[in-house]
Length: 245
Image 1 (tube, rainbow, N blue to C red):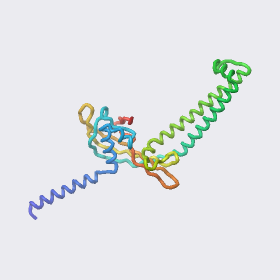
Image 2: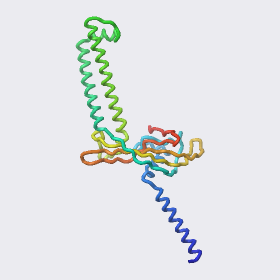
Image 3: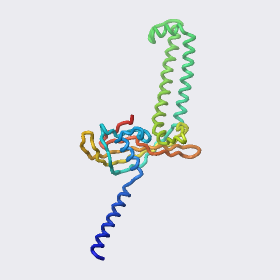
């Protein structure tokens, strides 16, 4: 074989090797992160809102136009208890409504005494009927605080699980009430190396960790697996991303 043909063959082999390396470097996480950094760079909050709860803010964090994925962590799974939390919230709301009715009835039945007790305060030394109303009224108020706390805690617990899962399984053509399901929240961290154009105009090479999550809902008619959502991005040194407004 002539030297010219050998050189030509070497070029072809090198080209194919390079193409293969590029293809192998592509991962399933690449497209969503490409979309995330592009939307962040353009401040396209409408697009970001469809698949992310955070943003990489150009004015404070910089701009990323290219990156290399260096590691994808194993998936972590955490139980979702949306259905049971929603039921607890409804029960707490019903308890609160019943309490408010009972409190109002007591206030109506003991109107003048309640007014005197409220004016005197919890620690006043009262006698007779007013002392009885004082004890009963402030006991009601303490009960109301405890019930309100239960309602608030249930609402916060539901919101903490519901937001990412709703975004993950969102389908306008087939709306899903996630509070009718339990399931799992799946998470994984993707480590990337990227040149970041800083707000100062300088470029710095950084290692970032991006967190992706998705909901997997368990139902009688089969599982519903949501799409991956970007829920976190931080510098490997610990600096976090900006929550999407």
